[in-house]
Image 1 (cartoon, helix red, strand yellow):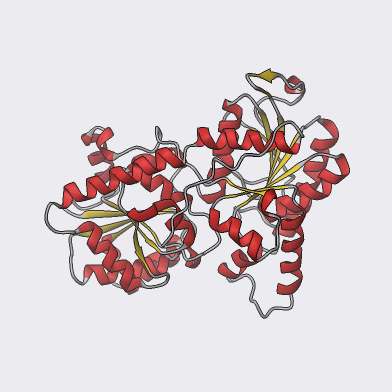
Image 2 (cartoon, helix red, strand yellow):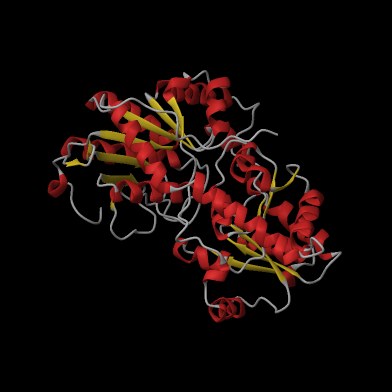
Length: 433
């Protein structure tokens, strides 16, 4: 069921530089790999850890795309649910049960040093089995479980299930020996709302590979022009790019409404809407708004192709509404050097600093105004956009590099294994209003 090299051939830890190599069991309760959000964080963390000499095995659901070179161990399939899963689903109970069994079998057969869990389902599996096998557990926190379920319209605050799920989430958060959060806002959330001990928490922001995600000027002009023609984007239109899931909590309807308002003023703009699922639903919404000729739906864009597609853009947009989830796509936009328009949430402000073009959450008219400002600022607009893009790229490279993050994860592993103290000097910069 797995791929890449076996653990038997990698079973002995080796010394490397100032520290030793760790054997890591990473629990990913999702259909890894898919081209969005938490999957990218899992992928990039794994790749930087292996680059640093550690051995990572990923336990995940049966579905998902293979990633050459990674040791991925999948669960058995579920006959009644074959297609890909995004977001909350009652079927995940069965998926997680199978993932628990798969994780148990790996721990029985292989000598891991540490369990690195993602999402609350992974934390539950890791904490239970970590106690059984006496393995330290790291929880990679990427947002509140109950808040995400509410954002996805899978749970309501008045539901009889809300209280028990909130208590389960609180227990998981408080029980984890160490927690990595994707933002300083998430760290404050854990301390202030869930009562977690601050010394157990460290901010490890989403990061970006600045060599992979690079400005459009670094590509041959004819290559980008050919891609633009391939996508059917009419010449002479300024291009707004979006990359991510298409869903209400991602602000997709608000983005389409903002485009309608923008097109009422200008007709030389176009939206490249890259993502999945629900393409047909939002295509129909675009038709009802009579903007279908100004929006290109690409469907799923493979992660390896994302940098080239983003390089087509004049401006990027991130209309995500959730106040607790990460927003890794913003860092990709920044590394490409794109002025970025977004709804004003704590995580987005943390990434963009003072150079974001922000609208009140849920305000489509405000989003349209900021898009207009970014696309048509007046005066020497090309130079203004270039300077703004350069500042954002420099911020991404300085504060959000995976090399720095990999060393930070190593230090957390060392602390959990009693080998090193946990410094707090590598946190992301915090921006005040």
